[in-house]
Image 1 (cartoon, rainbow, N blue to C red):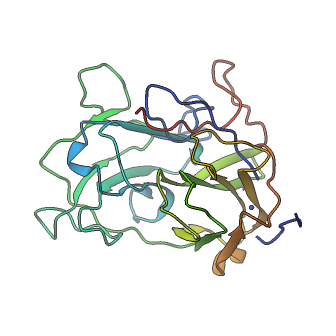
Image 2 (image 1 turned 45 degrees about the horizontal axis):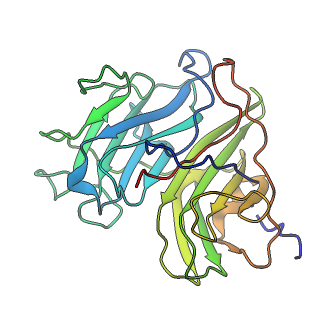
Length: 286
């Protein structure tokens, strides 16, 4: 196969587990006054939204500018969690998150402006848990909802078109990585996850407004080509090579039949030895 060097690095997937965790845990909580923190949340009892996409947006508190974004498209199961290592920088940020009941990709909070269910934490690094299980990042579906608005998007949009997919394909997961050269960090600022992308041969997705000109980004792409729920790094992990954010003004196409897989994610080392050193993305439990 020919090398693929248009604007795509690799990932390692864990075996099926009993919980539904989406992107990997690796870096433990870091003070927002220092490096920021991981962006994480554990949702439970979201059964009203099994067929809805759920958006998680880290935004600046005062100006509502988008800094990080996760999309679970769709929930599929009622309990789901994700972790985006080093996603949050030191500037004060809130977390807006919402179930896209209307299905248009923009928030219209019920009952103020539409049918979407939305909530907000004033500090993305300090979740506001409401579960009985004692977890400090657990949030249970609850009303009333919090009226939020779409953030200002200062960056370019990652538009990714996958080609060469067969009817066997399972999930697709994409990580937009910001390379923080000053601190030597790989910040997972964008996450897209879809458990079933249909029968092929193409599938498109986007992570809007994240790639800022003047900063460096790469993209990790995991494609479960055979639908077995386990990623083979030799054939199912790809990378968009590191580029300036300005390069994402144009769409990116990846043909999984002609592009060389990257093989494995770069090792991610956090300050705590208790956390794994690779991105992991288990599927929902059966």
